Every structure is written in C-alpha cells, then in structure tokens.
Image (cartoon, rainbow, N blue to C red; front, side, top):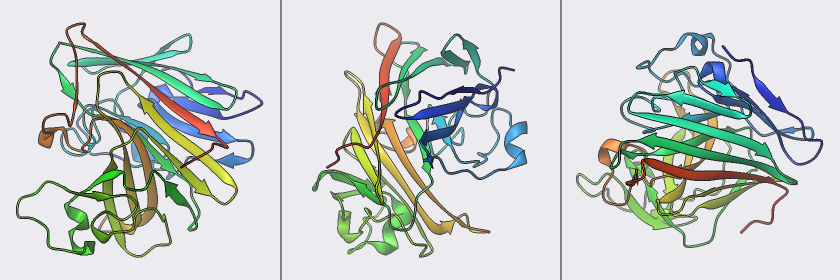
Length: 280
C-alpha cells in the first residue's frame, strides 16, 4: 500500500494525499492555515467497496455519484496506486487517474476518467473545509442555484410535489441565504451552483476552488451542515465541492446533469485551488 504523498512548495499551497485509503486528500495548507477539516474515525481504515460512507473529513474523490448508490461513489473505499506523481484507481466500470502539482499560488490536479463511450457519471472534489463561524462563500450574485428536498422547510414557498430540486439565484435561492457558513442552527442543506468557480472568505484567508472541463457540465456543490446531520450525534461541517455534473445523485440526473464519456473513451478535467485569490 503506497504511503501518503505530500509536498511542501515553500509558497502557495502544500497538500498531502493518502492513496492507500481511498485517495483522500488529508491536508491542504497555506502556511500555518490548514484548510481541510478532519474527523478521525477508525472505521475509515477498514472500508471495502459497497460500505456506507465514513466521514473522516479531508477531500474525498466522489465518483460516479455523491448521494445514492454506491454511497459517495466507488473510489473513496478502494486503495489507489501511485506511479511517480500520478495516482490511479480501478473501479471496474471506469478507471480514474489524477496528477497533482503545486503552482506559484496554489495546486492543480489533472484528471482522466476512462470508460466505455456513453458512460455517465458525476464527480465531486468533496472538500470539507475547516472554517470559522464567520466564513462566507462568494459567487456571482444571481448564479442559478439548485437546492434539494432537505431544504424544503427553510424556503419561502411550498415544495413542488415530486420535484427533485428547485432553483433560485445566489446567494439566497428561494429565500434561503446560503453564503454564510455558520454558526450552528440545527440545519443541513445541499445546493449546487451553476458555476465553475467560487471563493471562500474566512477572516483574512481566501481559497478559490474551480473546475475546468471542455464539453462537460461543471458546477460547485455546497453542503452546509450546521449541526443538522446526522440525526444522531450531529456535527458541523462545510463541503465546498467542484463537480462534473449538476446534481448529487446520478440516478436522478436529467439531460445535461451528468458528465458523459465521448467516443474517445476518456474525459479530462482540471481542479484548480488557489490561495489568496481575488474573488467575486
């Protein structure tokens, strides 16, 4: 099993990944600032494909779905391999590789998914961030934003019968303000912003998260858990998740809501994380 892969560039962002345990990113550090939230759980070490998700924090590679089956996808529960600076996982129906490098002001990860043409999937960089109660999520005002049924009691109108999601403009779709990321209030909601880039402000610290993919739908998901999840022993956690696709559950993805493998058999995309950024 390969050991953790870590780098310290001396500037910008430094990162650590753990290919032996699902490829999870375990650290994203800007000097003394650690951006990734942690929730140690010994059960994480013994998972096998098909297990329920064990939330240990960090950044998980969720593919081919986030919600639904398999829970948080099929890559987080499998050991990855490494060749040089490229890490890989084979999940049967698809193979995923990533090459992560530091840049002058951040980190870039290049991804390749190989599968049969026509294969549909959702991918999320499921980044759980260590944020203060004063943190904010910045995106362009009016960005179309989907919210999902767990938010129904918090909206300014009734939930349409049978609707998988409803849409409104950022930062308050359907009257639900989502840009403030604390303090705990007993709620937990998910949203998907129709944009490829957002920025987190936490005091003087800034982190931009972006995804780039030619010919594929991109978005950024928000999981704002202010002590409303799980039902027993809830905790506070905030996921800012660049995505391919525009929904959490592949099973409910409509036209344009999932990535699709073209005739070449490959989908390529880039995750860009930038510190000290200029943000919307």
